[in-house]
Length: 569
Image (cartoon, rainbow, N blue to C red; front, top):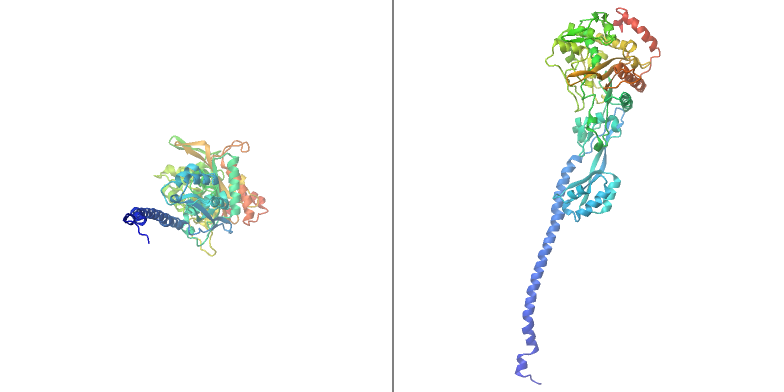
C-alpha cells in the first residue's frame, strides 16, 4: 500500500474540511437558533393578539351586548281596545352593530354600509368604525331586506343583535292615548309611559276602554272642523258617564308613533288632558247646579238682567241680552252672564270654592297618562273671582277635568274618575255623590232646552235626544282678552230620557266663514261638530232613535214653563 508523505498526512482533505467548516457550522447553528427564537417570539405576539381579539374582545363585546339584552330581552305586552283591536304590539327584529377593534378596513366598510343604508352618512359610519370601543350600534330594527343586504357584505366585525320593535297598527288614530316607546323599548309618552312597568314585564296585555270605531269617527270629525274653520287645533272625547270609561279621545294636530323621526314635538301636545282653558258659558252648568243644590234658587227664582253689573271701571254684560228680569230656566236658556253672576253672589265665595272643589275642578285629575295638566286657580280667591268664574272666566281646567265634573251632573249626581282602562265585568265602580239626583235631573233639563230652543240647536241629532251647552271664551294674551281669538266648546250628553254618554269637543281659535255669517261662537262651530259625531256614533253604540223626538221637543218648552212639572222629569 502506497503511503502518503507526512505533508499530506498533516493536511489531508478531511483535516482541511474540518478546520474550515466546523467553525462555520457552529456559527450557522447559533444564527439558526437566534432566528428560530425570533420567529417564535413573533408568532407568540401574533397568537397573543389573536387570542386577545378573539377571546378578550369577545368577552368585552358579550358584556356590552348582555347589558343591552337586559332592556330588550322581555317582549313588551300588547295594548288592545275594548273589542280586542290591536293598538300596540312588538315584532322581533334584528339590529346591526360593529366591533371597531375587529375592523380590517374601516374606510371600505363604511363605504359599503353607507350604500346599504341611504339614511346613514359615510362620515358618521367611519367615525364609529374607527373609535376605540368594542361595541357601536350601526342601525336598530332592520327590515329583513336590510339585514340580508348587510349579510351579503361579509364584513368582519359586523354582527346582529335580536331585538323587538314596537308597532302601532292604528298609527296616528290613537297616538295621544297609546303614546310610544323609545329605541330601547321604554315608554316615553301616553299609556306606554304611564304603564311602562306592567307592559315591560310582558305578562298580561292592557285593555283600554277605547272603541276604535268611535275613535275613528271622533278624530275624523274633529280634524274636519279644524280644517273647515282654520283653527289652530281641536279636541274631543266620548265618555260613559256611569263607568267613567273614555271610549274615544282625540287631539289635533296629531302624530304617527311609527314614524318617530318625523314627529313634530308640538303635535304631541294632548289638548284633552294637558291643555287647560277657560270655558266661557259651559261653566254656567256648574253655577246653576250649585245654586239649585244649595237651595239658593229654584227654576223659577227671578234674576234681574236689565242692566250690566259694574265692577270698578269694568262692566259685566250679556251677549245679545234680554235686558229684563228672568227666571233661572230663562237665565240658562239665554246664557245671561248677569243672571249667573247674581246667582253666584247668593252662594258666596267660600261655598262657591267648596262646591267646585267637590266637583273636582280644583284638583289634578287621576288618569292613566303622564300628560296631565294642573288647573289654574285664582289666589287669593276673592268675590270678583267668584263673579267671573260664574260665567266662565278666571279658572282654567283641562277638558278631562271638566268632563269629570259634567259627568256627575249628567249621571244622577255621582263623581266618577275618568279612566282609559276597560272596566272588568262585575267590577265595582268607585263613585262619590256630589249633588242630588233631583239637581242632576233639573240641570239636564235645562241643557236640553239649550238644544231645542237655545244656542245648541246645531248640535241636534234627530232621534237621539241631545242635551248640552255651548261656551265661547275670549283668549288671553299679554294680560288682555281678545274677542277675535276664542276657544269654543260644546259639552253635552245623550240620550236625554236615559243618559249614558257624554260628549265634549273644543276648537282653538276658529275663524269665521261665509257659512257662519262671520260668527266664531260655539253655536256655529263646536255645536255642529258635536251633532255630527253623535249622529254617527249613536247607532254604533246601539242607541235606538226616538221616532217622535221632534214632537216631544215642541212640547218640552211648554212643560218647563208649567210650574212643578219639571220636577217630574
